[in-house]
Each structure stands twice: as C-alpha cells, then as structure tokens.
Image (cartoon, rainbow, N blue to C red):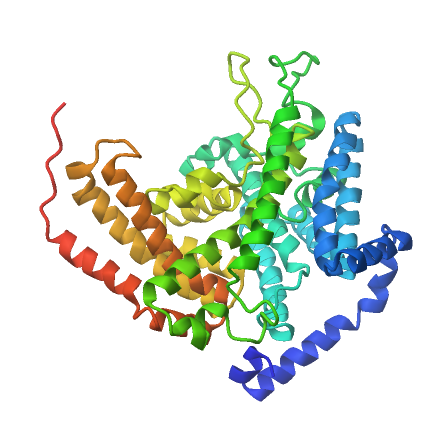
Length: 504
C-alpha cells in the first residue's frame, strides 16, 4: 500500500486507479511512435550497465546529457533558419525517447494542445488558460507518480514536463506582453518584460524546436522563446544585413568551463553521497532515512546536524552537474550568449546559466541564495507569478510548491521559508545598518553567511525526505530549534529601535 493509499478514501483510490488504467489503455496507440532510438543503442546501454554496475536508467540519463555536446556542434554548423528548429525538435524527441521511452508522448501532446490554444484564443485569454493547462498537466503527472511510485526517485516524464511547463507558461505571457506593448497599453509588468516579449505566435516547427530543444529538454534551463529564436536565426550575432553586431566571442571556454565543472560536480556527488547518504542506499524508498535511524538519533545533536549538513551539501552537486552540463550544451551553439550592447561589446553568457555555485554556497542572505539557485526557475516565478500577482509571496511560493509536486516535505519547506524571509528583512532593517560595512567577508558578513547556511540546511531537510512522518520526526529530534530561534529572533529584534539613516 502506497503512502497516498493510506490516507485517501477507498472510493478516491478506486477512481484514481480507473483513471490510470484508462490512460494506460492508449499505450498501444503510442508505442509505434518510438522510432527514433535504434534497438542496438538500447542493447549497448544495457551491456554497459552490466559492465559498470550502474542501472540502465541512470546511464541513459547521463549519456543523454553528455550527447548534447556533439549535437550542439552539429547545431552550430547548421544554416540559420528552419533547419536548426527542425534539428532541435527531432533530437529533443530522440533524447526523450532514449531516456523515458513511451512517456515522451506527454511532451508532444501537451505541446500540441497548448499550440492549438495559442492559435484560437486571444492573447489576453491564452495568458491565463495556457498556464492553467500546463499546471494541470504537470499536477496530474505528479499525482500519478506519487500514487504509483510513492517516495520513488525513478526518472519519468515529470522532470522534462516541469521544464516544458515553464516554457509554455512563459510563452503565454511573452505573447500577451507583445500585444500589450504593440497597442501601447500601460502595463508595468509587460514593460519590465519587454526584452523577452514576442509579437506573434511562432510557426509550428519553430515552436516545437523550442519546446523540445535538445539542449534543455532533460534538465532545463527553461529560458524564454526569444533567446532560443535569436540563436536559431542568427539575430543574436548578426544584424538584418548579415553584419556582425560586434566582435563575436569564442564559445570554446564558455562551453568547456561548465562541462568540466559539471564532471567535477558529478564526481563530488558520487563520492560524497556515498560517504554521507541522506537516505538508506539499500532501500531509499521504504527504509528509514539514515538521519533518523536509531543509531543516528543516539548521537549528539551537533553530530547529527553536521552529518545532515554534509549529506545535503553533496546532494546539491547532482543538480550542479545537470545544470552546468546543460549550460555548456547551450553555449556551444551560442544559445547561452546574451548578445551585444549598444557599443558592440559582448554582454556575457547568462542566458543558459542556471546556477552560481560559489555565490549559492556563500550566500549571506536568502535573497542572494535564491537568486543563485535554479536561476531560470527563479526568473519564471519572478516574471510570471510574483510580478503578475502584485508581489504576492504566497502566490509565488505556492506556485513553486505546486510545480515541484505534492509531497508533504515540499510544503513543510515552502511554508517555513517565509519565516526566514521575515527575519532576514527585519535584520536588514535593524541590524545591518549597525554592524555591516558593506563587505561580504567582514565579520558581520561572515556571520550572516554561516547563519544563512545553518538555517536553510535545517529548513530544507523535509524537501529531500519528502514524507511527512520522516520530516516531522527529523525536525522533532532537533526540538524544532530552527523555527523556535527564528521566532525568538523576530520577537527580540523587532523591539530594537530602527537606526536613523545617515545623512549624505
């Protein structure tokens, strides 16, 4: 019996099972679409799996990520225009069929349904209904996964679908913003997003090239359509007369740097997680996590916390690998290049950058930490949720939680984060003017770095544990110290007088 079956009424479980059975009945119709991956490729991967001792799923994902580099070199060599879009679409579909098999059809179905909505609905309506459709689809995917594979970490279509959700959501607003700006209407959010607004719906080939883009289909980053289109038609590098907009920089180092960094992160993850596993390596889905076993709970609190801190530290390198690898795969064909400024100077390579490891690991506050982690998801939430809801933190964190899924651990974390945010804002108002000299590595700055790390690592543990009972047992054995200290800090510091601003 799964975790969901234990809490849901029998008639609900029966309804879910009937729905799943009905959805699975279409499988024979979609099986013939698996034509892009030759049989000998699957056989070679299975043979490699037996040789290395790694499971097939992990190898397929790893090889899928790495193959993006030779594909990127081909993409670079192709002529600008539809050929690039078609290549991007077909090879993205190939990677999905290679890694998740028949489940690739979810990407195609949701992309085509959303495109039909873009065709028939006014932009003002589509910017609401397309995001709703995308979120309903990923919600169904998360619930399905959670029902049939509770606490499982197997790869399925929900990972790529999360990336697609951001793309469809963003594109809906890009089209709306383009229409608003074209009509000269006053809309503050649209003006702020003018850089990524588009004036018309892309053709179907261009659209599928974006939604299936091989360099971002498995792990993101989900940057806006305009950046993708500019890289495919050459307008990022050349003007309409074919003249370079500036001195085109080499993409060699912007490609090698994240590639080499990703391989280093992969090694650190494999070694570090082997030494400090958070979950039970023999049965992570069912056995009690290492950090709440009787043996671990018998140790002093500081020892348990230090172990958890290290375990979470090494887990992050799994994400660093995926995001840095994808960054290089985009940069190789200039999709990650920002273009030139008005003076013809290169702006940089931030389009596909999704993580700043050093900035994240040494963040002195939650704002800096959030800005350095999963940057394109943060951009999506900021541009299309936070700005469109009048700056609602509740809507923003709620959307982020829904997008991640429905494990209780996600919501325990996201409901705790505002507590840190409130304390941070209060500290910035009451304490920073007294002690900070504006330097990150000052004594006060270092104290902020350590405090941020300690509190965030405490709050985020449920995010990895997923299950409610595991998360609560874990926090309970810390006596909820992180929450209590945060409340005490807020109460005490709020009583302090606010320092007067220094006169210029």
